[in-house]
Image (tube, rainbow, N blue to C red; front, side):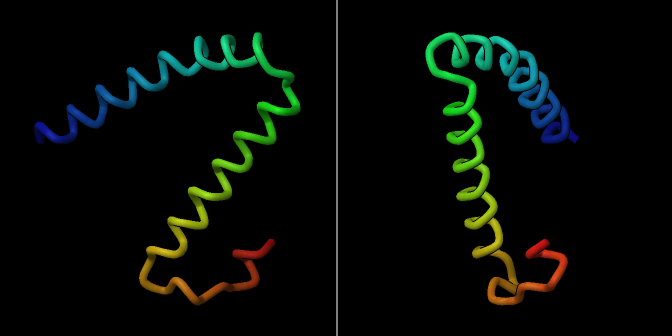
Amino acid sequence: MQKNYLYAAITVVLWATLATAVKLVLKDIPSFEALAVSSAFAFVFLLILKGTSKNSLLFRGADIL
């Protein structure tokens, strides 16, 4: 039960700082570059997540679309 509260608190803190972080990032770099960087990080994260799952070599048609 205590772990749930910890996860909730971490989520609230991350969600609260997201708007400030995005505003600061967009002040320094162009929006297209920020989009490219965030897309690259998301791609790498999902690739790692897929690679560490049980069926890491199994790709269905819905996974590619």
